[in-house]
Length: 121
Image (cartoon, helix red, strand yellow):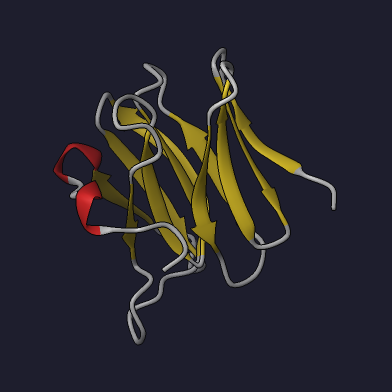
């Protein structure tokens, strides 16, 4: 399989192999972001390298600090799935996502409860 890079910073790479996304640290640590129905469409790494986001079938946010790779999922519950086509960071702990209809919506990353999500769910 061939990995496809979605986002890169000085210390991290977000990539996917088909429907499976992962984040890799420069020191070799690797964490699963989870599986997406269809390939992930977009990713970003926070400018302060505290978190990353991967989107497509919903949105998954992962911590890049300690604990590394702890993730939270949004818009992936049956009946509430959102198809996300683009991401942009709007502040230290904030991002906006673009849905299939072209509209942008905000998400406060600081409010993310990443302890409630296990990658691959």
